[in-house]
Length: 373
Image (cartoon, rainbow, N blue to C red):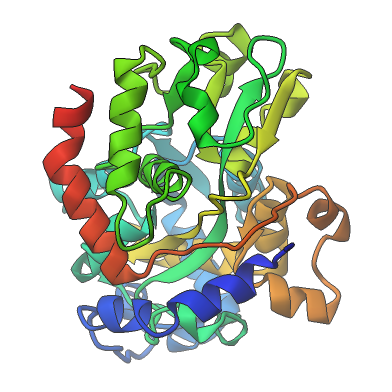
């Protein structure tokens, strides 16, 4: 079965994600326009409209982002486009950092000019840190399905994808599912993108392994067991993969989001990507503004840009599925060429609820290090 991403997610998480995450979100606030009003603004209207928000952001002149690799969902072009459009300098820290690194940096740099203004977080980390976020509704807020946002805008899903297996067809046989990776042909060749206790991509890689090994969204123990077997067989490669390690041949097989694996194909013609039909695991990342943002107007303008048609299509160009895809498709503003280039997805998609994510996160926190060493 071929599925559309937004509708599948909305159906699967509507009943649980809002309740779990919104319950610990700060209440929506109202403020009037003032020279310091951006820090409390919950919409552009609070500052007098978009023109006033742009003026305030330009006056600040800078934006601090963190953990946004240039080749991740087209963030390189997104950052450049935003900077060029508004004349704002974007300071990009720790581009290869994890979601947890973003939160750690905000805590360590609180009150300093170099603290992160905005976050782009996996669901597990976002759900655990909503007290650090400032509520804000972008002008296109109504276009975003209710299941994919906090009602006050404290967090909002931004782009998503499906977990995949990328492999160099010149170095390994084509896998049909995760079980194949336990075979001798993959000895010392299988890498996972990050630490699953800290990084969303790695976390969902373990979930994919679980589903592909007979587990369920309620029980990802088979995924943990799979990686234990992978290590015991000598097939697990404890290297964080990147386009550089893939092209060099260091990481011939990679568990990662489909949009990240697909981004390598132009650089390596033998690189192939599959989303296993028996383990279709999807997830969205989450945008949020730091409650302690040193550039609050620029932070809010950044969100406006990301959720505009231009920003959404830039994510789509990078192979990620933007959260406003359905409404943009109806309006005729979605990039049809980019949509046609998305990887084919067959099978029944699985999206963990907030409760399932919390259970899985707890299991990995207690057992991942013991399993992998």
